[in-house]
Length: 370
Ligand code: GDP
Ligand code: MN
Image (cartoon, rainbow, N blue to C red; front, side, top):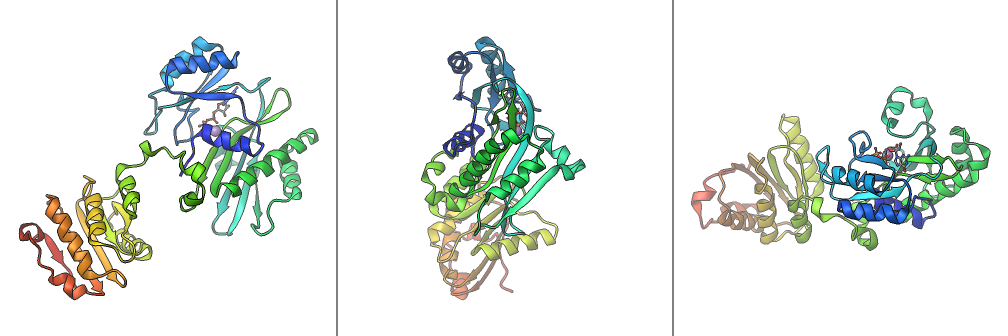
């Protein structure tokens, strides 16, 4: 789950990371009101789950409330790489201007099985270019989760950033705050770009990006409730409701599989033979007929799906129950989509012998029992 910039920055602030004063608005009039309250110059920023907003025209400076309203009017509704802006953040501009933009991110390096901290003195909107062309300008350190972040890590990074010594105290405060935020929120990413040095010599987070591990949302209720469900595909919400692991993908072969490992293997095989899976779907162990039926409905609700591959290896999951689920679903849905069924393991024989009530539809099932 991703947080919006304003949510990420408010979270940072709870951990002592300085952020500008500001508030969100969903109409130009609201944006004007926020700008009036802040007094002086503000920046109006599109709130979408997508980077590169600055370059896409989603970040604009305003000298007064009139301009803030004008920019909000343009930015609300703005499409940033397929993400429509519904909310803007109106922040006061960095006090005294921006002297330097720093990049600072904490993420998980899965290969190293450690937390990685990345930073660069050349942060800002061109960080990808810095990473590609001058990777030596990006400093990385790895933190052993058993040991945690220690002051020497801060010293090493502050030195690498060539930060003026007068800023080292502030930098450590922000680095340790961000690290505590990362650990305390079960995040897989906490990024600040830019972390600026203001004209007044203060470090401040002007942007924020946080990704929370979905598997941790159960113990992060305060973060979970910030999820913007309006942007989660309806099919995924429905799947969550009934306890199916379902992720919409871009291909055209729908998959229904029991077990995450078999589901991933099935997707790999589809790709190996030149196909593209339309989804990841794990119906889980011991799925009921209703669950199977819902799963199939979810798959078929995607118009991109041109075929369905059902791959069931029954252990706790019973073949006859899966068959009942398929028959139930096909009783409700009219579809021409061909389906390939592989049913093996517990009660596979009974499943394959299940008598459909509507043979008209089941005639399209190709039963592969090899
Ligand atoms: P992104 O492009 O989606 O990463 O959006 P950012 O929040 O990073 O904004 C893009 C750029 O706008 C930053 O790199 C800054 O140069 C500039 N910017 C953002 N906030 C402020 C601000 O408060 N004051 C000023 N002067 N510039 C800002
Ligand atoms: Mn940014």
